Image (cartoon, rainbow, N blue to C red; front, top):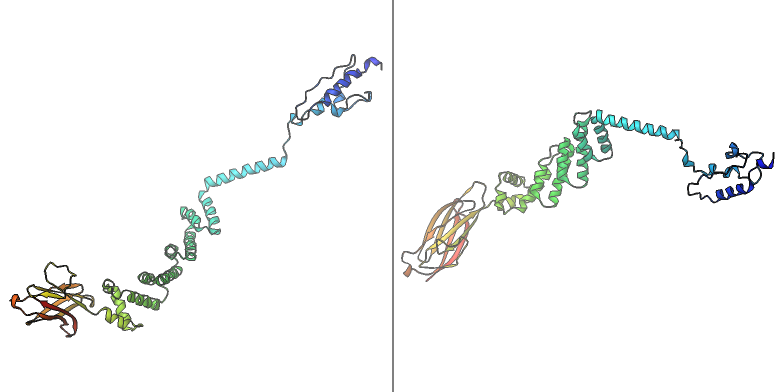
Length: 363
């Protein structure tokens, strides 16, 4: 081969210098390699050097074609990734189809998940949307029961009672009423305790009710609004007859009559005004009031006014919380005697002295 057929060594060195200066971050420019004077560069220089190439020619690995970025040619996707994407898409379609075509089933599944995790409130909402699906009606009752159990742990007895009623669980309902009643007794709310105990149907509550009524009786022995309620009166009477603790003594005191007498000297005087002396020239008004007794009982009274110069007797009949106002005066007030006086009230039937009012008559 003649010297004319080989590439110019100077031109080849120039190309090598250009290739070495290419930055890896930037997209390299494709540099055309000047052709030799007579013979072109062989086509297979992109892969490897021919045997006839001189030692100072550009190595095949450093040619511009090899330096071009890999992204210039499309990448092939991994078959496993393709399969996973296809399966995911199919799963989404299946779930979507189930949600559309079988909404009750989906609600039932989600309700079961909430139920099994103890979130009975959330499960209840779902089950109530599908009450006729499978065993949803039964699960609704169990949700109310589970909610009630939580409320009992929190000592929220009132709400627990409501939940157990909805759960139709009589045994747990009575336990909730019992705990609720005990709670009220501890807090001295005896009437509410009685109400709770009386709702219990599966246990003997005789002792609990007796104690609650006794404590209620003691706390209200001077409150006639409580003493005269028919329901309370029956139980208080039963306690006294059974001689439960000291209830008999309390009963006699609570339902005995209490009579008061106030002296006034004017018809329009304040109801609660009370004098300890009165002028002989004034009229004397004796305000006789009665409290107590048994419900519906009427007290028959005999009253006797003893003043200097004479006496006066009155017969009265009073029911609980009623009063009468007998009047007394002198016919000749200017010459009437003065001194100590009394107004006594007796039980007409037993002749027991109930009240004595002492006062003075002055000039």
